[in-house]
Length: 61
Image (cartoon, rainbow, N blue to C red; front, side):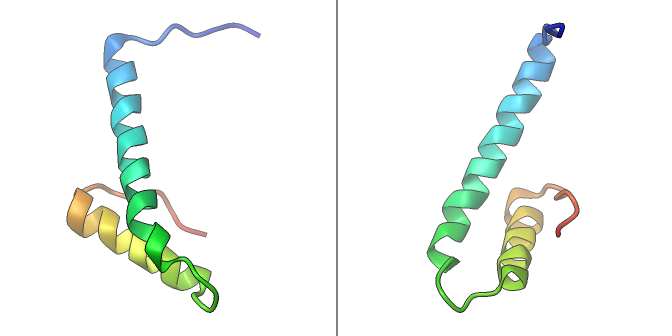
Protein backbone atom coordinates (compact mmCIF):
# COMPACT_ATOMS: atom_id res chain seq x y z
CA UNK A 1 0.00 0.00 0.00
CA UNK A 2 1.45 3.35 -0.99
CA UNK A 3 1.20 6.59 0.96
CA UNK A 4 -0.02 9.67 -0.86
CA UNK A 5 1.58 12.88 0.36
CA UNK A 6 -1.01 15.65 0.54
CA UNK A 7 -0.30 19.17 -0.63
CA UNK A 8 -0.79 22.08 1.79
CA UNK A 9 -3.97 22.99 -0.13
CA UNK A 10 -5.37 19.46 0.22
CA UNK A 11 -4.56 19.45 3.94
CA UNK A 12 -6.35 22.78 4.41
CA UNK A 13 -9.43 21.46 2.59
CA UNK A 14 -9.44 18.38 4.85
CA UNK A 15 -9.23 20.64 7.91
CA UNK A 16 -12.20 22.66 6.71
CA UNK A 17 -14.24 19.51 6.03
CA UNK A 18 -13.37 18.15 9.47
CA UNK A 19 -14.34 21.42 11.15
CA UNK A 20 -17.68 21.54 9.32
CA UNK A 21 -18.42 17.94 10.29
CA UNK A 22 -17.55 18.66 13.92
CA UNK A 23 -19.83 21.71 13.98
CA UNK A 24 -22.75 19.64 12.64
CA UNK A 25 -22.21 16.98 15.31
CA UNK A 26 -22.10 19.66 18.03
CA UNK A 27 -25.33 21.17 16.68
CA UNK A 28 -27.25 17.92 16.35
CA UNK A 29 -26.27 16.32 19.67
CA UNK A 30 -29.09 17.89 21.75
CA UNK A 31 -31.69 16.67 19.25
CA UNK A 32 -30.65 13.01 19.37
CA UNK A 33 -32.89 11.31 21.91
CA UNK A 34 -35.43 8.50 22.06
CA UNK A 35 -38.35 9.06 19.72
CA UNK A 36 -36.53 11.30 17.23
CA UNK A 37 -36.40 9.62 13.84
CA UNK A 38 -33.30 9.42 11.68
CA UNK A 39 -35.27 11.29 9.02
CA UNK A 40 -35.69 14.20 11.43
CA UNK A 41 -31.99 14.12 12.32
CA UNK A 42 -31.15 14.08 8.59
CA UNK A 43 -33.41 17.08 7.98
CA UNK A 44 -31.94 19.06 10.88
CA UNK A 45 -28.39 18.34 9.72
CA UNK A 46 -29.21 19.20 6.12
CA UNK A 47 -30.86 22.50 7.09
CA UNK A 48 -27.92 23.44 9.33
CA UNK A 49 -25.36 22.67 6.63
CA UNK A 50 -27.22 24.60 3.93
CA UNK A 51 -28.54 27.55 5.93
CA UNK A 52 -25.85 28.07 8.58
CA UNK A 53 -22.65 26.66 7.13
CA UNK A 54 -23.44 27.53 3.52
CA UNK A 55 -22.15 24.23 2.21
CA UNK A 56 -23.55 21.50 -0.01
CA UNK A 57 -24.07 18.31 2.02
CA UNK A 58 -23.36 14.86 0.65
CA UNK A 59 -26.44 12.76 -0.16
CA UNK A 60 -28.32 11.51 2.87
CA UNK A 61 -29.40 7.95 3.65
